[in-house]
Length: 297
Picture 1 (cartoon, one colour):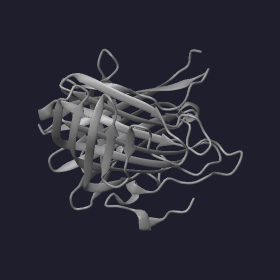
Picture 2 (tube, rainbow, N blue to C red; picture 1 turned 45 degrees about the vertical axis):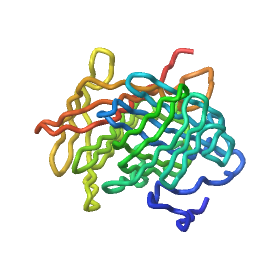
Picture 3 (cartoon, one colour; picture 1 turned 180 degrees about the vertical axis):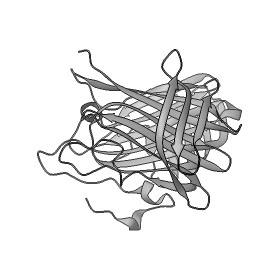
């Protein structure tokens, strides 16, 4: 499980290569990569999400995109040790490629602002007797060039957020509920998340990231939800000044396949994409992910 930094791209830690086999009898190991992206001016948003494992089910590649209200989702099985399925290739450098009957094209992504290192404080509850997940995030400038199945060409330029994790992980057994924010403003980005663990823990971690390499910590998250349980507003407490976020009319969202088919408590997650306004009137765009366990079975 050694790290080969020689293979890192411009994305540094977020281009960490996929890891190899794990010892027999160990819990589920996952190598995950994710990119949320959006261009409000073109009415485009979406997500690319890959998860592979040497010893667990739930290996899949997903590409979800909404273009002026029309959604296309491709979900395919992955083999162990790869982020490339029949139609989707999630490059750990700067390019994601899609080639299917519904959609063909590329999404390029370039890092902006500082890196968020979530590896030190274990905000995602670790599995018992397992080391913490390695977990990094960073905002991106994105450009998409796609052709829909009917021949319509769609190009856009916007922003997004990348995420890369690797380690022992099973959301349905270690987490009861969580909320996570990825927000890009013109002069900085913001990432923050709060998790309730099955061990009774309540963990919060986050960072305000700027172009000078600063990652100023976020220590607390308070959430007010709308009538459907999605984001109405939030207050994030931070040493360099609290952050108030108020949701604007959302663009839409996608359900997030996390694990595998199981008869028992199961994590259910949803990504909403929406503009947000701060208490001092600044506007950014956000992906907010909500996850909770469904206990009936």
